[in-house]
Amino acid sequence: MARLLSVNVGLPRDVAWQGKAVHTAVWKAAVEGPRMVRRLNIDGDGQGDLAGHGGEHRAVFVYQIDSYRYWQNQLGRKDFAYGQFGENFTVEGLSDAEVCIGDHYRIGGALFEVTQPRVTCYRVGIRMNEPRMAALLVAQGRPGFYFRVLEEGEVQTSDEIVQIATGPERMTVFEINALLYMPGHPRTQLEQALRIPALSPGWRGSFEALLAQERGGGSTTGNAGLTAAPAPPPAWPGFRPLRVSRKARESSDVVSLVLEPADARPMAAALPGQFIVLRLKPASDAPPLTRSYSLSGEPSAEHYRVSVKREAHGAASAYVDDALQVGAVIDASAARGSFTLKPGDRPVALVSAGIGVTPVLAMLHALAAAASTREIWWLYGARNGREHPFVQETRGLLKALARCHSNIRYSSPDAEDRPNVDFDAPGRLNMQALQQLGVPREADFYICGPSTFMHDLTVGLAAWGVAADRIHTEIFGSQPPITPGVAGSPRRPPHLPGGPIGGGPLVSFARTGLNVPWGATFQSLLELAEACDVPTRWSCRTGVCHTCETSLVAGAVKYRPDPIDMPADGNVLICCSQPAGDVVIDL
Image (cartoon, rainbow, N blue to C red; front, side, top):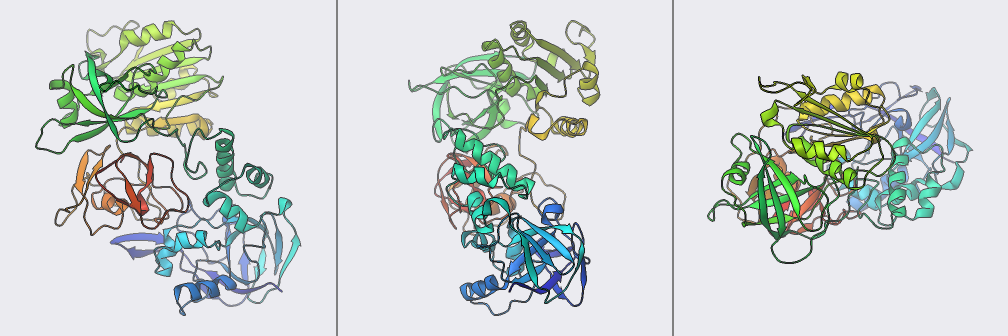
């Protein structure tokens, strides 16, 4: 007979971890007597990170005493107490291999529905004093699961657990967990899982992405259920030599380079919106400069075009502007990135400011080359005419499109800038401008520009009712960090790590422009990036969740531990990898 062995609750608190403060409620303690279970949690309980835990479909976490016994044996531990795994209910019975998504259980006065397996994160490793724990729970098929509360009521220790309904499709917690995290994602099982009404929205979205990947016939690799927007594998590994065949000034502070093969090997046409990484060598006695630049020209297998804005104190942009000459040979990566023009019939809004114009200009080229009949909105903001690149080029492209609209805003026009000729209105592009212009809400929005510009538009479009999957952004520089539960602290500019300089392979952070020798004191590329204050994105820290998946532009890595499922070709999981030689990563 299944029964409730312990009810465990705990409120969020700050815990010291690796010199940081982590806000977490993973510490749970058993309570005596009846306890009221409500729609979002149990009285006296809470969640520290509502993005990853809690909510209607993750109201109560369940773990089995049989798994306690298993881990005591595997880890050689005898110090476990109820709530050890952060669970609310410690139960006898209800094995992950038997309980199915959609099953209904009556416990005391409450009624519950099984919605999903637990999504493990690094905090269970902190609680267990075992950093590998997130990976072990998945690899050994013992994640535990969440209840949704269908009827609120009181529960208490020793309550009998009575199954009163079985979920459709009869897919167990173990099977659902493996379908997402383990290698191999059979199409029939994905379709079966998606027929389960009780499956939580997050897991449903992951399986929909995996199913689309399976239907794509291998056009992308890796695990689409764990990565937000998988991209096709790069056309070649590492760098190859490209020759500067043309150099053109586009505005007072932007110069374009047209790059062609220097070795007679064919190139591959990039997807409109993608970027490449250039390795520049201004001085023979100094480390190279690695920088990411969006492709700005028409899709072509014969040449690439990048357009570089000269930045104050920018070593790479100054070198490109002042010293790099036609005929020079530079190293370039294959095109990468998932900020790409999606097919379809919906209107397209290409919204940019400053040098953020480059990837959306490549999209405009692609639309014009295809003589697209989609409704297209070209919306661009610059400071003034001197800093407005590609003026004649964009006008020519827009003339080739049957259903296009254009609006140019100058935030600080010069006296010689002519309203309604050089620009359409003074001021900045913002949500008010988009609404006044009549940009259709059902459009696909592609946004690139300064971080504040993109943030304001992204938030504004979401509030306006635009679906998240129709808002696409590209960020120059580092992505916003994801460090769940870690208390915020002022961000420092990236820098070399403290202490003695390592003597290992050179790790180059392409977006940050930092070159750092690897040191034996670091356990992973993630730890090195954190020591340098390079913004990072992670959750499990053990090769499970793929939040840290990053483009590996050049070089090779070794994993310790091996990931549960490998990343996409050309990518790396920085949380569990070390350089096997000099590497360039897209951070």
